[in-house]
Image (cartoon, rainbow over all chains, first blue to last red; front, side, top):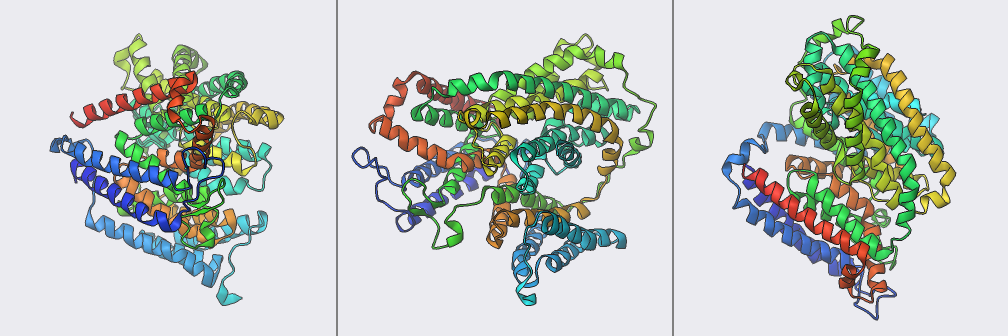
Length: 162
Length: 478
């Protein structure tokens, strides 16, 4: 993907983001003037969000405009690679990581970490038994000891075991 | 604690793909239970160790462990190929230590006078300073001013989430109690750095280190660094330290720029410029002295004004706040003894860095070859427990993952992270200074240009943004 295309996509995203923020401001942000500013130019808690909305629109338009002045030949200098197999790998890794907090609630820290590390190590290609033992068994026990016992941080115990 | 931080920092810095910033972000929760006098030097130790540790893979396998070590490759790697890896690594250690120490001395001498100057700053001046700093950071980090500004405003809108401290009203919490206190800075940081990097590496295939470190077998006594050789490069070390210190004072520039500038300057002023790039000791000393000299000076704007100059000091700002010490002019009034103790700790840490680095370099050289497929799952586990431990809340882990995805997309689109992190941290302060400026100036912000300090800062901000636009336009049309 060329820098030209990236600028266009980023510009469009910026404009969409500003629209989303603008849409949610009336329902999510109070319009009551901040105490002390009511007699002057009224400043409300929505001031910063509206500034951001304006900024995102301006930046988006400038990004799209700037893309028309870019040569396609700049691709070699700013390479943006989006290979499908790579994105799939990243997505699968993300799914595994997303499952982490939900499993923590169910199974607790130690068991969940062992399970997640086992899956990740296998997915990333670890095959030697001693490496798996180190990463899947020793490390979670070590982390549990450091944070749970030495630093007195109550790690999740899991609803299944409560 | 300083030694522990340095050892951890060198470990992280020597691993390509990990950064000192990531290490600090993940390990800040470890420092929660420590008093500020121990916790902050611990984190500073990680910072210093990480910056030096980045030179080890740069020299051994031509892969910088940190951005500041990129210029070290030019002469460090050729030296390693000539069987002088030990000499190159120890030269980088000595240069780093000298540069760091000189920079810490500058910090020690100038931080209080600068803090006194900061007392003349009112809300309008602070608002102008925030604008100037953010424009500078957005303009010089990354390859595009527009992307930098996009990142900055992204951070600003993130900082708006939660209950507004001035009016007491909620913003963008969507009925969630967990969002009422806003986005936890640490979890955002861990997500943006650690999780995003793992996603990047997973996308890239997490290929095991294929470059064999043939130099390891020769890493021994054949290529010792002599005192005469160190004395011979003293001019380069001192001039590079000066360059690094100057760069460190200015927000947004950072270690990589200092390293490359110092390397170029050393080559231009050397008696043997043709030897640069072929394994010249000065070519290792210059970037290493400069990138370490950025350290101490980077803390000047942080301590005096509460404005971080780069990502690492932004993280350190978070650490100070967590330990109950808000950087700014009041820092020295309220915590003078603690601050001087911390600064002396920073100075002494350079001595510990020299000693520990001298004896541990061989060990860290071996660490470079840990396969990423083992390392990165471990980092995920540490990141999860680190973000959980901030508030003992699983919601923070989910937030961390969201920011991991955001960080991944930002890195893929080459949108710099630094502006977002800094505005996320300073957003409430910027808003408060804006509101107070409105009140002080009777609702007329144009009066900012009638006050000398704020007028100069806003003019500099305008010049910086125009200059950055011109530079990025030139780069794009090359």
